Amino acid sequence: MGSKTIVYKQKVKDNLKNSYKHLSRLNQAFTQLEKSYQFSIDKKSFANIVESVQDLAYSDQIIYRFSKLQDIMGAKLFNSLLLFQGENVNKPFLDILNQLEKMDIINVDKWFEIRDLRNEIAHDYEESDEISISILNMIYRLKDELENILNSIAILVEKEY
Image 1 (spheres, rainbow, N blue to C red):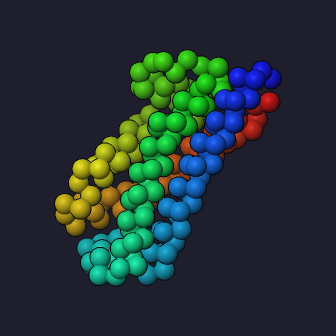
Image 2 (cartoon, rainbow, N blue to C red):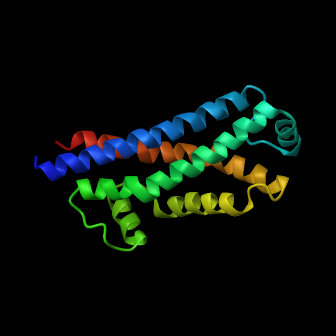
Image 3 (cartoon, rainbow, N blue to C red):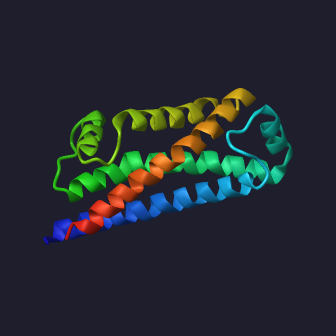
C-alpha cells in the first residue's frame, strides 16, 4: 500500500468519524424528543416543542447536525472516498454522485432529496411552523439513509487493504 493510499484512507476515516459524530448527536436529539413526542410530529406536538426550551434546543440540534452531516458528506467524505479508490475527483459533482451510485454507496435521487432538504433548511427553517414540521419529519425519515451511506463507506474502507 503506497503512502498516498494510506493518507487517503486516513482522510476517509477522519471524515467518517466526523460524520458519525454528527449522526450520533442527531440521533441523540431525536431520542430525547421521542420520549415525549411520536414522529411524524403534527402541529400540536410542534407547538409543544416550541414551548419547551429544552425540546426546542433538541429540534435545533437536529437541524444543525443534519445540515453539518450533509455538508461534510457532500463536501469531504465522498471526495476522500473516491481519492482512496484511485478515482479522479476533478469533475462535476453529479459525476461524483453517479460514481458513488455505481459503487452501491448512494442512490443519486435520494442524495438530491437530502441535499434539497439541507438547502431548504438554509433558507426557510423558521419561516413557518408548517415548514419546520415538514423539515423535522423529513430529517427523521432520511436519517437512516444517511446512516446506511456511512455504513457502506465504512465497510468498503475496511474491506480494502
